[in-house]
Length: 333
Image (tube, rainbow, N blue to C red):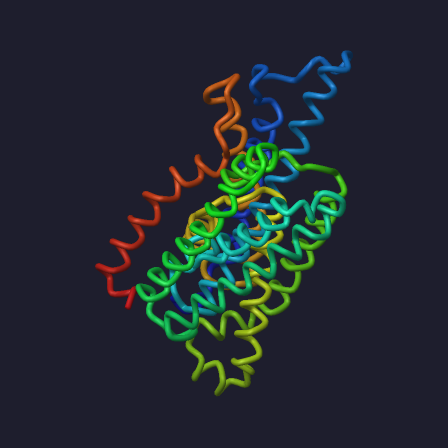
């Protein structure tokens, strides 16, 4: 990972202002877009008010989930010093998905979905991350080892999940498959609010430890010599990233590559300093996912494309491009 650099405050202000303006325009587009047509629904009718409520709920879910996945990507990339570290690629999202799916398929999450699903997803995410690091050789493993380990853990989690699906009832099967593809329609306002609070706390903690993350990008030895407790910081960051990914998965299912695409774009625009990068990435990630969801529900209207499919179509080529470009420049070891 590159070292933090100093940029002109005027340049930062202009770029941040431009991003805010673009974000407002894109969110307005999300409010106006839907399978029922482009524009504001007829608020004088119950149907129109219901349509607007559904759109606003999905936008809110997109902002929460996108912020969580993007910040998790920033944290993993800083701690592991690997540009391709991301919850989906590292297998963390798959582990969280397996944990949450177990709660859904067993019916344990029916009564207390807003509480049990995030807990089950977090346990699955943490177990998956520990397995990936153990197989890859620790936090100092090369990006190729991490990618291969993430693929192995994802495949293993998917295999277990497929086995569970084959034994599931018809009702549970429908719920899990749609959830696995990524869906921003929250099951309840309580779940959305609790997840939003958890993500907000996670983003604030990530912002508070931003100077330590800057130091960790220089390497564990350098960070240790300037007074950073590297072992504690690595553990805190990995748990925090897993918690953010688990919160996103428990609300919206498996949505990949948001934590890869958005941090790279924001880092190229605003630089690698984490005090700037974390809040801007959280905002941009939320807007990005909300826009993807708006496109997914209008592109083939009245049919709806799962948002996870659309982010994978966008993120897959982006991932391959970064892998090829950074490998050629020698950034990936």
